[in-house]
Image (tube, rainbow, N blue to C red; front, side, top):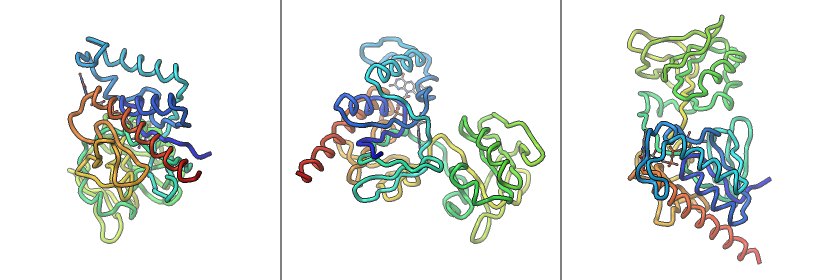
Length: 288
Ligand SMILES: Cc1cc2nc3c(=O)[nH]c(=O)nc-3n(C[C@H](O)[C@H](O)[C@H](O)COP(=O)(O)OP(=O)(O)OC[C@H]3O[C@@H](n4cnc5c(N)ncnc54)[C@H](O)[C@@H]3O)c2cc1C
C-alpha cells in the first residue's frame, strides 16, 4: 500500500499534521511512539497552550491521544531509519520494512546530541543507527552499542543473538542484563577510531576493538534521516508553508526551527498537512 501522507513523529507537530490529513480524507500513517513524546510527558505544567490553561504534560498527552482516537488515526510504533526520495513517492525504511508514501511530513523534534568524534566519518563504514537494519551485516563479529534511546536495551539484547559479542555503553542510565556475550561498559565514549572503517571505541579509560558501533538515539540528525534534504544545523530548512527543498516532503515543529513551543509545533503541523494535501491534489489534477 502507498499512503498519501506519512507523518514521522508523535509530538504535537506530528499529531496535529496527522489529524488534519485524516480530516481531509487522506490515507495517513503516523509513525512514532504510543506514549507520544518525552517532551510532552516530562512537562510538569504548561501555561501557554490556548484553551488548556495550567495543563500538565501527561494530561496534554491524554488529550492529544484522545483526539487521534476520535478522528481514527492509529499510531504505528516504528522508528524511521531513513527516508528516500524515489521520484513519485518516498520510501521509509523502518527496520527491515520499507513503507511507501506520496508525501512525508517530518515532525521528529530537534536532536540536541552532538555527533561523537568519528561518527560522521564512519557512517556506513561501521557506524549504524539501526540495529534491526544492520545486525546481519555483523553476524559473528564484535560490536558496541551506545544506548541513548529508551529501546536501546531491547535492541542490544536482539543484537547479542546475532553478533559475536556486544559491549553496551549505557548513555541514558538504563542497562541490559549481562550475558555471556553482552557486557556493560560504564565508561564515557569519546571517539570512534579506525582507518577506512571502524576499528575501536575510545573511552575516557581505554580502547575497545569492535567492527561496528550502533548509536541508538530517539532521533537522528535530519540530513542523516533524509539524504538530500537542505538543513541548517539541526533544523530542516522550510518556507512559510513548511515545504522543504524536496518536492512532497514537509517539516514542522522543533525540527523546522525555533522557537521550541507546543503551539508553534501544532500550528506548523496543521500547515504542513494542508501543504501536503495541496501537493496531492495538484498531482491528481495533472493526472486528469
Ligand atoms: C521539560 C520541557 C518542558 C517544556 N515546556 C514547554 C511549555 O511549557 N510550553 C511550550 O510551548 N513548550 C514547552 N516545551 C517545548 C516543547 O516540548 C517542544 O517545543 C515540542 O514538544 C515540540 O514538538 P514536536 O512535535 O516538534 O517534537 P517532539 O515533541 O520532540 O516530538 C518528536 C517525536 O518524534 C519522535 N521521533 C523522532 N525521530 C523519529 C523517527 N525517526 N521515527 C519515528 N519517530 C521519531 C520522537 O521520539 C518524539 O516522540 C518544553 C520542553 C521540555 C523538554
